Image (cartoon, rainbow, N blue to C red):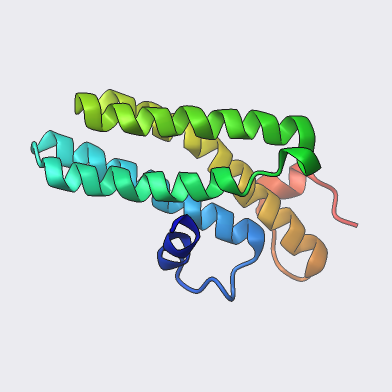
Length: 143
Protein backbone atom coordinates (compact mmCIF):
# COMPACT_ATOMS: atom_id res chain seq x y z
CA UNK A 1 0.00 0.00 0.00
CA UNK A 2 2.76 2.45 0.84
CA UNK A 3 4.34 2.25 -2.61
CA UNK A 4 1.01 2.65 -4.39
CA UNK A 5 0.21 5.58 -2.14
CA UNK A 6 3.53 7.18 -2.99
CA UNK A 7 2.72 7.27 -6.69
CA UNK A 8 -0.60 8.93 -5.97
CA UNK A 9 1.29 11.78 -4.27
CA UNK A 10 3.56 12.43 -7.24
CA UNK A 11 2.47 14.52 -10.21
CA UNK A 12 4.14 12.22 -12.73
CA UNK A 13 6.39 9.55 -11.19
CA UNK A 14 7.58 8.42 -14.62
CA UNK A 15 9.25 11.79 -15.24
CA UNK A 16 10.81 12.40 -11.82
CA UNK A 17 14.43 11.61 -11.07
CA UNK A 18 14.93 9.60 -7.86
CA UNK A 19 16.15 12.72 -6.05
CA UNK A 20 13.25 14.83 -7.31
CA UNK A 21 10.77 12.08 -6.44
CA UNK A 22 12.14 11.90 -2.91
CA UNK A 23 12.03 15.69 -2.58
CA UNK A 24 8.39 15.70 -3.71
CA UNK A 25 7.56 13.04 -1.14
CA UNK A 26 9.08 15.16 1.61
CA UNK A 27 7.11 18.17 0.31
CA UNK A 28 3.87 16.20 0.50
CA UNK A 29 4.60 14.79 3.96
CA UNK A 30 5.46 18.24 5.29
CA UNK A 31 2.35 19.74 3.68
CA UNK A 32 0.23 17.00 5.23
CA UNK A 33 1.60 17.85 8.67
CA UNK A 34 0.81 21.52 8.08
CA UNK A 35 -2.71 20.38 7.21
CA UNK A 36 -2.81 18.44 10.48
CA UNK A 37 -1.79 21.55 12.41
CA UNK A 38 -4.53 23.55 10.69
CA UNK A 39 -7.07 20.83 11.49
CA UNK A 40 -6.01 20.81 15.14
CA UNK A 41 -6.52 24.59 15.27
CA UNK A 42 -10.19 24.21 14.28
CA UNK A 43 -10.68 20.97 16.22
CA UNK A 44 -11.36 18.94 13.05
CA UNK A 45 -10.36 15.46 14.20
CA UNK A 46 -11.25 13.76 10.93
CA UNK A 47 -9.12 16.13 8.83
CA UNK A 48 -6.24 15.78 11.31
CA UNK A 49 -6.41 11.99 11.08
CA UNK A 50 -6.48 12.08 7.27
CA UNK A 51 -3.49 14.42 7.15
CA UNK A 52 -1.49 12.32 9.61
CA UNK A 53 -2.41 9.15 7.66
CA UNK A 54 -1.14 10.73 4.44
CA UNK A 55 2.15 11.78 6.05
CA UNK A 56 2.49 8.34 7.65
CA UNK A 57 2.08 6.57 4.31
CA UNK A 58 4.72 8.76 2.71
CA UNK A 59 7.31 8.48 5.49
CA UNK A 60 6.66 4.73 5.73
CA UNK A 61 7.49 4.45 2.04
CA UNK A 62 10.70 6.41 2.54
CA UNK A 63 11.54 4.24 5.55
CA UNK A 64 10.90 0.99 3.66
CA UNK A 65 13.23 2.08 0.87
CA UNK A 66 16.24 2.59 3.13
CA UNK A 67 18.84 -0.08 2.40
CA UNK A 68 21.00 -0.43 5.51
CA UNK A 69 23.08 -3.26 4.03
CA UNK A 70 23.98 -1.21 0.95
CA UNK A 71 24.23 2.25 2.47
CA UNK A 72 25.51 1.43 5.95
CA UNK A 73 25.78 4.02 8.69
CA UNK A 74 23.98 6.82 6.82
CA UNK A 75 21.03 4.55 6.07
CA UNK A 76 20.97 3.35 9.66
CA UNK A 77 20.77 6.93 10.92
CA UNK A 78 18.11 7.82 8.36
CA UNK A 79 16.00 4.83 9.34
CA UNK A 80 16.20 5.93 12.99
CA UNK A 81 14.99 9.41 12.04
CA UNK A 82 12.09 7.96 10.03
CA UNK A 83 11.16 5.67 12.90
CA UNK A 84 11.17 8.61 15.31
CA UNK A 85 9.08 10.75 12.93
CA UNK A 86 6.53 7.94 12.56
CA UNK A 87 6.30 7.81 16.35
CA UNK A 88 5.69 11.57 16.40
CA UNK A 89 2.86 11.14 13.89
CA UNK A 90 1.19 8.64 16.23
CA UNK A 91 1.49 11.11 19.10
CA UNK A 92 -0.03 13.91 17.01
CA UNK A 93 -3.22 11.86 16.77
CA UNK A 94 -3.04 10.65 20.35
CA UNK A 95 -2.51 14.04 21.98
CA UNK A 96 -3.97 16.36 19.29
CA UNK A 97 -0.88 18.55 19.82
CA UNK A 98 0.37 20.86 17.05
CA UNK A 99 3.77 21.15 18.75
CA UNK A 100 4.42 17.48 18.05
CA UNK A 101 3.50 17.98 14.39
CA UNK A 102 5.84 20.97 14.25
CA UNK A 103 8.65 18.83 15.67
CA UNK A 104 8.07 16.26 12.92
CA UNK A 105 8.20 19.02 10.30
CA UNK A 106 11.42 20.33 11.86
CA UNK A 107 12.99 16.89 11.41
CA UNK A 108 11.74 16.41 7.84
CA UNK A 109 12.63 19.84 6.41
CA UNK A 110 16.45 19.51 6.58
CA UNK A 111 16.21 16.06 4.96
CA UNK A 112 14.02 17.53 2.22
CA UNK A 113 16.57 20.31 1.62
CA UNK A 114 19.43 17.80 1.43
CA UNK A 115 17.58 15.73 -1.17
CA UNK A 116 16.73 18.84 -3.20
CA UNK A 117 20.38 19.93 -3.14
CA UNK A 118 21.57 16.46 -4.11
CA UNK A 119 19.10 16.34 -6.99
CA UNK A 120 20.33 19.73 -8.23
CA UNK A 121 23.95 18.61 -8.12
CA UNK A 122 23.17 15.37 -9.98
CA UNK A 123 21.18 17.29 -12.59
CA UNK A 124 24.10 19.69 -13.08
CA UNK A 125 26.47 16.78 -13.57
CA UNK A 126 24.17 14.97 -16.01
CA UNK A 127 23.01 18.10 -17.83
CA UNK A 128 25.77 20.72 -17.57
CA UNK A 129 23.66 23.42 -19.23
CA UNK A 130 21.00 23.27 -16.51
CA UNK A 131 21.38 26.26 -14.14
CA UNK A 132 22.32 25.47 -10.58
CA UNK A 133 21.41 27.77 -7.70
CA UNK A 134 24.31 29.82 -6.31
CA UNK A 135 24.11 27.96 -3.00
CA UNK A 136 24.68 24.65 -4.79
CA UNK A 137 27.40 26.03 -7.04
CA UNK A 138 29.31 27.25 -4.00
CA UNK A 139 29.10 23.87 -2.29
CA UNK A 140 30.05 21.56 -5.13
CA UNK A 141 32.45 21.93 -8.03
CA UNK A 142 30.87 20.39 -11.13
CA UNK A 143 33.37 18.95 -13.59
